[in-house]
Image 1 (cartoon, rainbow, N blue to C red):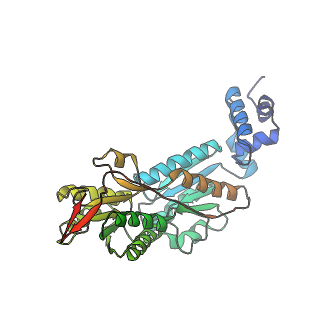
Image 2 (cartoon, rainbow, N blue to C red):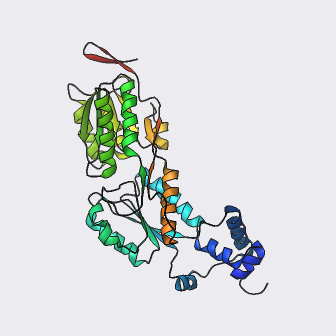
Length: 342
């Protein structure tokens, strides 16, 4: 073979049709996994380099996906972006990541930046207060999937944890340990996912005849730490704390240490979001695990179907959270006015 390899060379090498090669290189996920691997293997063997500029002009696609997130340092968002990047790469796409810093105006600007790159679609985790303007800023022609923070009137396909049920199950678990005064530390009820977590928590506490103590502690680790230190110094503090996300959890751990509150002997801690550092702490932290892999796969499915103009089944996916029990939660019994860990 002379000169640069062509798509036809790849088809001959992989023993597939030219159309199959084209579909694989376009990221069409309807191609069977075995055929897709044969095509990609042939590309590697021949050192085939697709002319993306020519392909973009022909197809009016850039094979680029925009991902808009509030904060890349948030471990949940970082894990999600990594999974999405792997899926995009396997489908022949590259990603452009922008962050909004929880600022609605900046979010609009960053969405415009992504659109100016002529991306084929966007996956967005809205900033606080940013959901209201998403429809007008994205437009009706842009394939889009909303992840994690889904507004009540969201017009786009969406993927999120079933936050209500996950928080409901977490609160029921704390009640089953004998806790009757339980606090949930949340960033802001203005976010749909946080609002749902608070609602699920309150439902379980009402059904279990417990005392639901809702504390809004702010959007940063430092704000959460300061707010929770005040809570831990109260005379009638709760015997268990349920933190609504990983940043609040970090603030809670700092506050517990600064106030000298023993965990779990004096207070049990259950976190929403599970990551490696929760397992490494001593005591290891019990947590509600969000299925990041499933969320990423479903978001990619919804976006690729829109890009390919294929019919979407189940446009709003709610994934089940998983309760993981470790050392930071303990059974309590009430003896007089004191709660004692077993």
